[in-house]
Length: 177
Image (cartoon, rainbow, N blue to C red):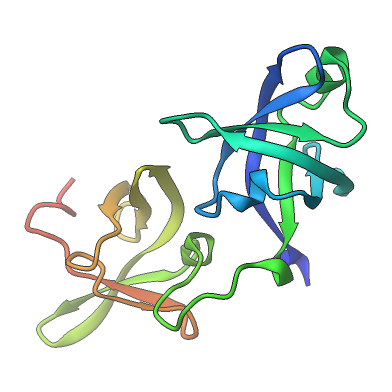
């Protein structure tokens, strides 16, 4: 199963002189960076390597964490980890309630709209813009243009992970780019 990994963050820089690293979080679960335990580091497309997370805390008002990793005790060592991805195994995903799903599961879903009582495929989700307001990046079939759709109940009333699509109800003009 190739989708066995979920990227939860990126190491952006070192922090201080004792080997701590600054991590940009892609996860809604803060414990990924604060709770001690096994994480995995990946450089570009190399196989992930296991590492222990010793401690971490969120920087106030930011989506970044300062993290202490096992065996990383110098600034130089921390510097070498820049741009590494932090992964967790997908079987370790927090259990979600029935109505919830992980945002990454939305990528590649077909995007449909209801037109004259029929569902019509208009594109697919190709990415997520995630700076506080979750935006879906949708590539339209008709012209390969990319549009940003706010991921809110009013505009995306239905997500069907099992059948690989979501329905959007875009306000007028949102798709006329």
